[in-house]
Image 1 (cartoon, helix red, strand yellow):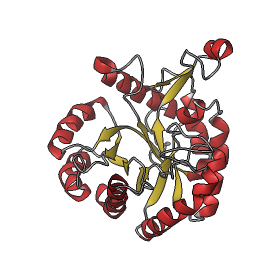
Image 2: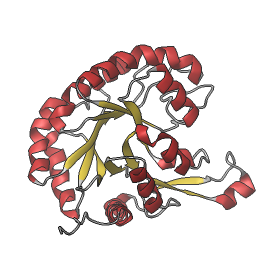
Image 3: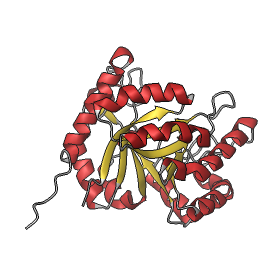
Amino acid sequence: MSQDIFIGTLVHADEPAKTIRYLEQMIPYGFESFAFTFGHDLETWQDPVEFAEQVMPLLEKHNIRVGAIGAYGNPMADTPKGENLRQELRKLIEAAHLFKTDVVSGFTGRIEGKSVPDTMPAFKELWQPMCERAGELGVRIAFENCVMSGTWASGKFNLAYNPAAWELMFNTIPLPNIGLEWEPTHQMCQLIDPMPQIREWGKRFFHIHGKDATIKRDIIAKYGITGVEKFVYHRHPGFGDCNWTDIISDLRLYGFKGCIDIEGWHDPVYRGELETMGQVHALNYLKWCRGGDFVPNPVV
C-alpha cells in the first residue's frame, strides 16, 4: 500500500500566472497537495478549465495532487451573486477531472431567516440535481462544516455545521457522493468534541481542512461564551488543542483516504509575515502525526 493521506494547503485560485508564482515558492517546502478555492464574485472568478490548463502542468511535474476544488458563498441566495455561484459550482463539477480530483467543496447555502429543517426542501431542490450530475462524473460533493454565524433556527450561508444537520441532509439527499469537508475547529468552536464524529461520520469525510483551535477554558469559566472576552481561537495544526496523531489514526481506522489541506490565514499569532512559517510548521507537524513518510514493508 502506498501513501493514503496527503498533507497540503489551501490556495486561492487567483489569476493563473500569479497562482503559479505562489505555488513555485510553496512547493519546495514539501506540500504534497493543494486545494484550490475559487472566488464567487464576477470580478474575481477564474475559469476552471483555463486555470487547470495553466496550473496543472506544474503540479504534475512535481507529482503533487489536488485535494479539492471549491467555491464558497450562499448558493441558495436569490440574488445575482447567488446565481453566479450556482453556475460556478456547476462548472467546477464539470471541470474536476481536469484537476485529477473527485472532490468539489463549498457551503450548502441557506435561506436566510429559516431553520435548518425548514431549509431542507430548498437544499434538495438545489443540490439533488447537482449531486446526481456529479455522481455521473465520478465527483463527490463535500460541504464544509463551518457555522458561518448560523444557528439551528436561522442563518445566512450554511446548513452543514453539526451532526443533527448532517443527518437531515443525508436523509434528504440519500446519495453516496454527498459528504463533508470536515474540520475539527468548527466543532470545537461549538464546544463539540470532534473525535467521536470521525467514528460516526468518517465515511462521509471526503476532504479534511487542516485547522485547529485553542479553547480558553478560563475565559469560559469567568465570562461564558458570549462575554466580553473571546473564548476560542482558530490555529494552525500544531499550535492548538487537537492531537492530530489521534485524528489521523482514527481517520485511517474508519477508511479515510485523501488530502488534509491546511487552511491558513486564521491563526492570531502566526499571521502576517509569520503566515508561511506557521503553515510550514503545520505541514511538518501533520506529516509527523501521519507517521512520517510511507515506508514499504520488506519483501520476503
